[in-house]
Image 1 (cartoon, rainbow, N blue to C red):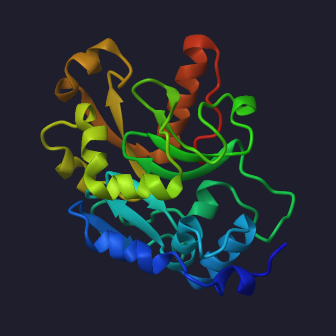
Image 2: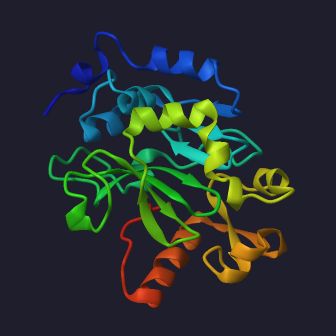
Length: 248
């Protein structure tokens, strides 16, 4: 086990490089403030240093709201989150979303992989664990994967965490969600708090929604409820369990 001082005090920390990349993006991004106590506890449990993008992010950032809050990337917020509007109120932290223990536990490991972000439709971005195949997930160890609510399954993204962040900020988010957005989506997303998502009826995976997404009805629900519906729907359709999608 590495102590927190060893994880924090590193040569060439990743955070300044991340901020430089962030300053050059045209994608709207809100950086939420971090809580030092939460950050230290999360970093200690993950045993990653501030030299990595993930470690630097956890140490210095309470979370990111990307593209008006459509995507929430989890960090180390204080209390129940900060900010108002655009999904910023009450954004959970990485530790909460992944069910990390309150005190350091060397035996704890994230189930199948580490959930690092949710989108407002109940999509889940995660970093694969050491044996994705055993967990029923595609991709290799450490690779980013996405649980698609319109397909109710995991998709490999062909990149690690750092490359995934670079792809988002280079504009990849717009193309990725091109078929899952409708006129007026920004207004609907802005009305959500950081623990809510949008429930779509008929569901995104249905033929009706795929044919005319704009004609669906949408309402705000707790993100935990939205994730639970997706997991249950997959089980009912073919008996397969997509596994852990996040605790909040």
